Amino acid sequence: MKQKIKLGVLAIQGAFKEHIHHFEKIIEKEQYQDYEIEVVEISQADQLISCNALVIPGGESTSISITAERIGLLEPLRDFIRKGKPVWGTCAGLILLASKITNASAGQKLIGGLDIEVQRNAFGRQLNSFAIPKVDFSSFIPGCKDFQHAVFIRAPVVTAINIFNNTTDSFIKNNDNNDKYFNNQSVVYAPSYAYNFEEKKPQVEILSRLDESHKNLIVAVRQGQILGTAFHPELSKDSRFHQWFLEEFVLKL
Ligand SMILES: NC(=O)CC[C@H](N)C(=O)O
Image (cartoon, rainbow, N blue to C red; front, top):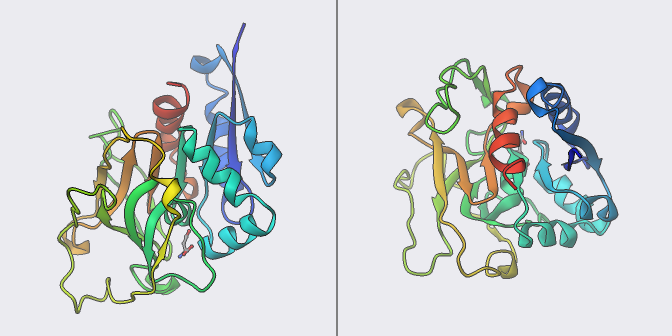
């Protein structure tokens, strides 16, 4: 009997089709023939309950959260996190998974789950979007030395990690106060039950930073079953990030 896996992609707004496209390509591979993997769009709470894992795409975190709340999906998303199921957020998805954000919009809500602080739109406006042609992710994705491309569109960055670990408030040292990256202080928090539910919660691991010309800013983190990337692997042709998420998070259940 094949093992059934249902992988949901939150389909309220943003680049959900692009994520689905990557996963659909990957699951055709010979090596996954022992599994019956279904990739599904999630836009209602009842569709989420049966999922084994979830991806939250890039897009607009304010619209996604306001719509999710209006259609009764925000609490089910928090429940999904509480159950410890694998979740990956890209760009807007990373913002939604943060415990605290700065440069927030009015009415914006968070799902929470990652004990991190995130600065929205950390590089400025749409015009300041950029792509890095080859990125070395081989420290966590075996053999992936030349991921093409890492796309940053009005991207966030991670400005602090393990922020709710009450003993060490371990801020990452990358901000002098006049810095253009860190100037707007409108702050939103995820509700506390999103991160207090489990005593032995793993620490946040930093997976990837930008180079010195971008102040070594943190752009990928993992905390147990939750993965967050400030860039959009869904907008690149390279499927290795998706394949890694599938293998390392979803199929290891
Ligand atoms: N490309 C993106 O996902 C951008 C995220 C966007 N700046 C937000 O706050 O939601």
